[in-house]
Amino acid sequence: MLRTKDIETAAIAASRDADVCFVITKQNKWTLFAFCYYQLKHRTIKEFNCIIYNKEKDILYYILKSVVLLNSKKYKLLYEPSREF
Figure 1 (cartoon, rainbow, N blue to C red):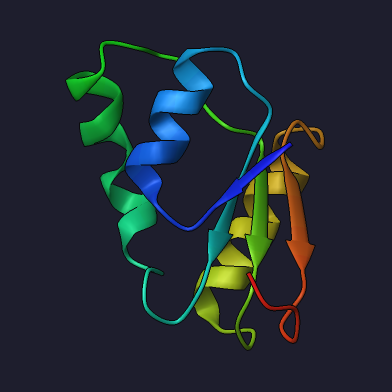
Figure 2 (cartoon, rainbow, N blue to C red):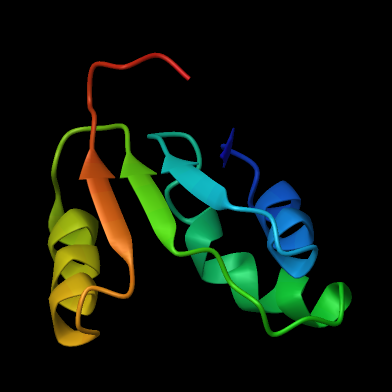
C-alpha cells in the first residue's frame, strides 16, 4: 500500500489502480480539496479509499468520519496522530 502526503501522487497512483492511502498532516490538510483538480489533470475518475489522519482531531476529521459512515464504509479513515510519515 502506497502512503503519501502529496495529493497529486495519490491521484496518479489511484489512476493506475494502486492501493493508496493519503496522509493528512497539519501542512497539507487543505490539499484534499484539490483532489478533483488532479483527477481532471490526469484524466481519471478513480479515487483512493483510505485516509490516515496524522494530526489532532478537528472539524475536518469529523466531516471525513461522517462520509465514511454515510458511504457504508467504502472509505477507511485511520487516526494515527503520533506516527511519523
